[in-house]
Length: 600
Image (tube, rainbow, N blue to C red; front, side):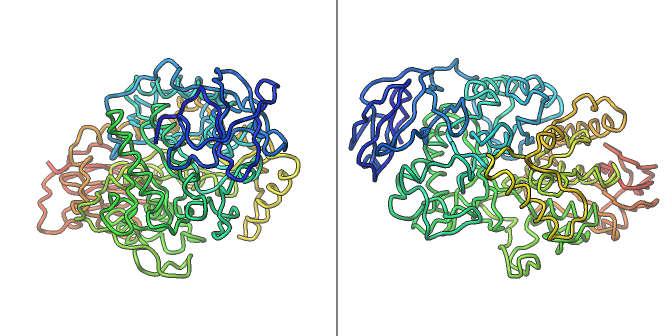
């Protein structure tokens, strides 16, 4: 794919008989072309080009066959929102963002954040002010939730409709480039969450330009994005061009691809495999690693097989592992409803921590069918770092009725235990913003739809949770206060309980940096032993992580737990939460918590 020419206005509209551009108030006729600079050579049919150069800051919109003005599907900036005109922006003309010589994101500590609620100001520039604190915590890569332009002024980002545009409320594309550069100067990588499986319901004008959707495939959001129907080639190029913009022109290190199981594609070559090959080519072109991470509900190891390595290989470098979250959450909280129904026991937690997928070809009660495929700990195609794990994330907090965090309903020791298990696991760990200090603020779902959709969103959210038996109040997504309630309170980090949790996370991440066993990606070299219904021991080389949810005094004898073939003469305590003592091979807990020990 050729680099985009940002001085040229062009658009794909294969069924149009005429396309005009309204440029700074003047209506100009565009020329139909079969080839043009900056347009994918394999999909030139149906492209229209303005035969004159444009400059940054100019406003423009397209008119298809005399219709109403519409934003550019490849607009980089929508200063007046999803219904307004586009603004010319050239990311390659900005002061170059500092780019590290290369960062392999596999195994690196990730941190998921939402720009609008990460700070009171909710901008990229304000977020830059906290990068040093993230670096001191031990964060090595930041995953930014979607920044595509969405309706209104507040949104999680998954209702984006202008996939190339950076949210103007956050600071637009110039602000994002500054943020990326500031992170890179601190040695922190940046990943962007992108949504290619659907577009939001308001301001979605793509269908007016061409067959961007395929009615042969239905998704929860309507017809699927057209990846395998007539004219699928230009639509696939539209998405691949978007990925190139972020990775090459903006200087990002990776993309997290939302819900790839909803990328319905029956073509001979799956879109993800094509994207993986394209990213590999760009990586060679610019001389630094580029990483693709998939969120997938399918529990299929083939997602992280290199493209071409197997018939179902998707070529992703990493994939999210929700089963590890479910195993931790259900074990620590005791929740067993919905998709937690098959989770909650220490044995299930042990399986998740060692074999990633709990549903790996067996029965899934929640789905009412067999699900997934097993992970091979000796596979040459992936290892532990190929799986991203977490105790909390935007979905697992925000899709709860009240957006409550795990610390809102469990003792601090329970969160401390979960943190020790996943941060010191064989996987790639990801912290959700504010988790590290047990933030008191919730993260409920919020949005800002227009007058027609807003009441439907509010009522739909309430009805959804009423059907699950939820008796409490459900925050109104459209209420500005719901958005305000999600903004982190950075001052509380200094308060005693919050500061203690922050120090715990710093300690755990310090151990991860300093001890080789804790960054080993070998899935075959991790054990988890069940002590009792409330306690597990995760063993990685000479390191043992003992985690308990018990609200009583409990003594764990490691010599007995690990078996007679392991000599445990004495223990060096590396980190402890509510451990009364570590005498010889025994560790005593006063309540929920965790202890990290090394066999001396």
